[in-house]
Image (cartoon, rainbow, N blue to C red; front, side, top):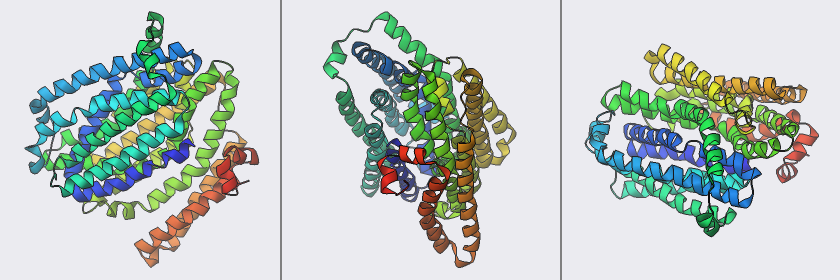
Length: 486
């Protein structure tokens, strides 16, 4: 269910070419930089209380659950609001730190002052939706954040462009979509919690300490992930002057968005396994093993052909982003390969975070960020491609460390014969796609791209049919019956 809901992320990928055609790659790059900065600050401000709720809510009583959510909302949104106010006041000096095209540079202080208020809105959305996820409400939360948020942003952006807002229209559209989703998030919160009870419930010191300690212990790993995702375009923007810096950030942003498609599979399991692992760890940790193994087998069978399709169609996809976007080809291929490797390694990271290993997320963060920083420094002259390589290495290093830690600490690992079956099925799908791509090369790019896209769906059916045993296919529920996988 979560994976199906995550398919709404495709709207975001589809929307990015619209943004680059309407506003230009340089303006789009500036937008990517500002949104990356908001994401970075949010992940620091929220103290990973979003993750702490996944640990605490499933195993506590109703009063404690309501109190934990109330405390998390207060502790995160108030500092986020104060930081937004400071950014508005000091927008002028902050603008001097960033590179922008001449037509955007004049409006940059106003853009920063305006977009700073995305921080409290996004912080509230993150905490409110994570509280719903802690109740195992995966589908509604994901649809709200992925489908409706992206659809609203696309509609606002197109409308504002044709209304004449050609420079700040994308930023305003983002703010409006966040405001809409914040309202809907409050309604979602009211479905799974009693808001009146939350307002009046006391929050004892022991509960406050538990929430803070659980969250702060997870902060390094979450900040590390944000560093790998959001710091690279900021660094590229600062490194290069004027429109060059904005364009480089835009190209990296394009590659990052397209390469995130394989994460639809992985993030579905990240969302689900966090609260499920927390609940299982409170009773019997051995029950985590089949969840871990199943998700790894399914990821191996699906992600290899999906990543292969993206790499084979990389040039065709980038042509949709308008003139100049083809410069992101190398970065796109490198990031996609890294995302595929990260997904195949399975969802060890959220399991490590949720079953009580409070020091291991810090160790993983240090490993990942150190690897990223070393490669970024070494390949800094290669621009977006060098940064993409550094990000891919850092992300895979974190995943490898989590896999090794689960094996050492709890004897959990997914790499058995059924996993090998799924991996071989995925590799078969990848090889078949590559062969078809080579054979179709002479007929021209458009026809080749359409043919490979049409081949992908039946190929996924085949990899699932061959890569998963009957019990795994039955575990897919109604989807498996409708697709005749069982």
